[in-house]
Amino acid sequence: MRKRNLVAASLAAALPSAALGQAQAQAAPRLEFAFEETVTLGAAISVGSTPFGKRNIIPITGGTFEGPGIKGTVIPGGWDWQLTRADGCTQVKADYMLKTDDGVVINVVNTGALCPPKDGKPSAARTQPVFEAPLGKYAWLGQAAFIGTLELATDTPGPAVRIRFYKAE
Image 1 (spheres, rainbow, N blue to C red):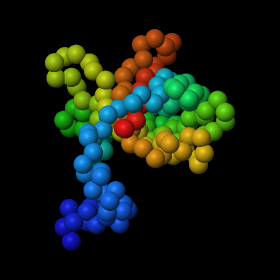
Image 2: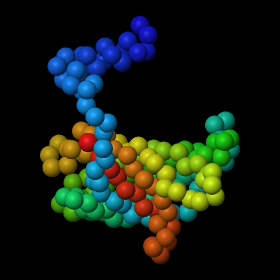
Image 3: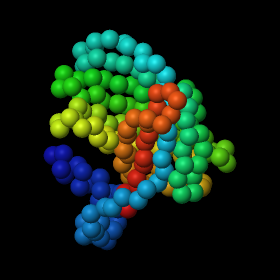
Image 4: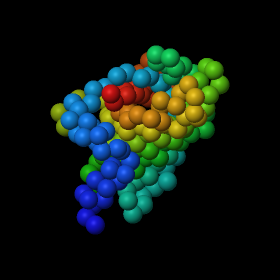
């Protein structure tokens, strides 16, 4: 079966036919702000050159996050696995945990590519976060698609990044 037919078959199995027809007719998604993180970072650990490119590991040492209806801290101990490719872009894959002010732990896996600016001006990188939250108050994080922006945080005492997450509506 061709790839396109496999995708159509998977969608048909997951969605009732009426819902599938409605989904095809909907307008393009729009983005709604979900929350913002300031993530503190440790010193880079160089793994060196691999067959895929130059590998670095950046420890995630903490931070904070806040948005409408959600607030808390970044749990120290996560990692950002970075791979600098031959084209100069760096693939990032961060895997870390958040702890909300009411004690709920949420896993974040955030991937993206940071490429050198073409016009010499730095810009926020785009990422694709996936959240794993327990059932309950924050289950919405695992039931939607998100996009993130990633940039250096210049207003912190040590190395940090600022990440803003937007929910696709």
